[in-house]
Length: 197
Image (tube, rainbow, N blue to C red):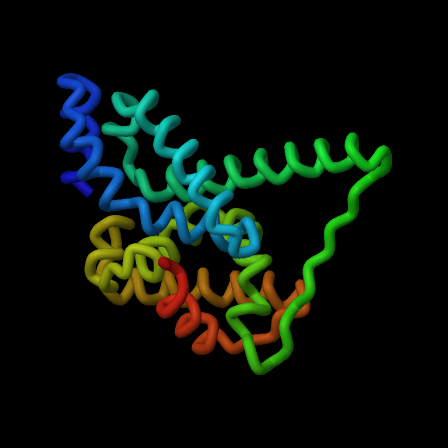
């Protein structure tokens, strides 16, 4: 995490393109994967969103270099940028069609649980509290160990494990209300395997 701050500081103060490129390289997969899920798997639009997020981050590099959890900011910025893109497309389609546009998402059956939760994951992750979201981001999206999660959250390894398990259960409950049934273990396995593309 200190490396992030140092790379952003070097970019903000010295306009070091190499430092910024290294920082983007560390986090591109997280941003792109979140955008890809939010946009239903559309790679072109996901790249556009990722680019918008990193352009915004470049403008805010000085402030972000002091941010306590940059991946949380990146994740939220991706959520908002994708939402803005979707809203713009919906408004444009509505104008072109001359009527309201209703979009629907089809949840896949039990044979494809990741595909069933993918359309809802970004919205439900964003609906979690900041501490719960950060715990899941660190564990599954950054693939940090429980010890690393604990260090970032100011807790021990066991405390981090409990925080992640509680956050995972909250996410599972939110997804269940969407009709996506899964055990916490299956959800954890799905996140570990698919959270970052």
